[in-house]
Length: 445
Ligand code: PMP
Image (cartoon, rainbow, N blue to C red):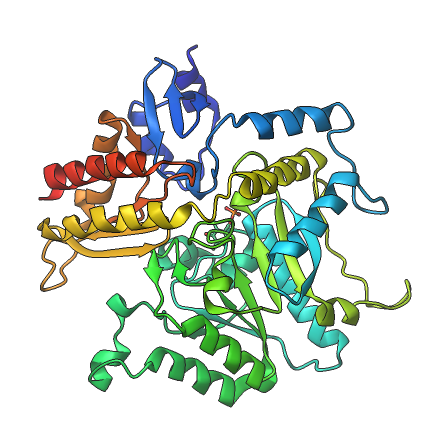
């Protein structure tokens, strides 16, 4: 049995309609090399979505490979339940040095979803421990995506993914998505009156007594289709949550580790949340690791004697895995050594310049860029804002054609997503965008 057949016989793929998968030829990746992926036939492709938004320095980065091998020579994994571990402690110290000031404690887990799940439970328990027991609700943004476990789905809001699980979820209070392109509020108000912020203020003013936290993806709602937020939004949300004594959970799972041009998106707005989540880029895309980082104020509420209810009863078998922490430490070292953040501005600007040319394509209705997080929205009629009929699978077909030209991308509906590894050079970025341009032109006009 060849690999493709073995896969089709035995593997159930995430976010995939398996009937369609089984009926079509599939690409099998055998290796990686820098920012490229190589299939079993030896053909090489640009990794244009960083292996689902997480690869940072490319594949088979010598320093990270070596760090993992070094750690393997000591131990691959030990529990953090009742034991401390060398790389987990070293990494926690380093993370605290780079997160917004005021965040002081690192709680490890192994995926973005679990990091958010933990943030939600932590915020909830915090208020219970403070004796403010009626603070049990969460405010979330419409079309939010925070992962796939039941708690993180509860604070999410993407109908297609989440509707069917409705009865399993806890209810949240939805604030409007602050993406200007999809704004309905300003249209009614006759121009931007920051009505999206006003809506949050209304919610908090009315219900703050029962709200534990607000959860937001900072600067851009990724999985909703790269919905970028107006500057100042996050800062205003921070002010409001503070004013109304509501915790702010910022989900940096997609935006963290340089994606938006700074180490964390919060830095663009000078915001320190009460709880921040991170995953994806934390190990540069090598191994599963996540962290939920909290302020001392939150942490202190959990201190007490063993018999009390103050313990945070949450933890996974692989929490703070030693190999993953070693990879993360090597990742942070490369950020410093190679001055990755300083090198991003030029790459982001090169992408912006190229993207400006996309506006001339008939089907390109909106181009949204936040650092190296890019979404190009395709529509049948951009003036009337008419989407393509879903059965045309325009976004999917653009991505499939891109493969023929040597680029792997994965769309969100009819939003073409481009998230290259940060290690891509300006020339790589320009070449990848040229391929995308050509594919949009050929498929959608
Ligand atoms: N939060 C955000 C903002 C995300 O974009 C994602 C994944 N795309 C998650 C959480 C979930 O992360 P994971 O897939 O690692 O569970």
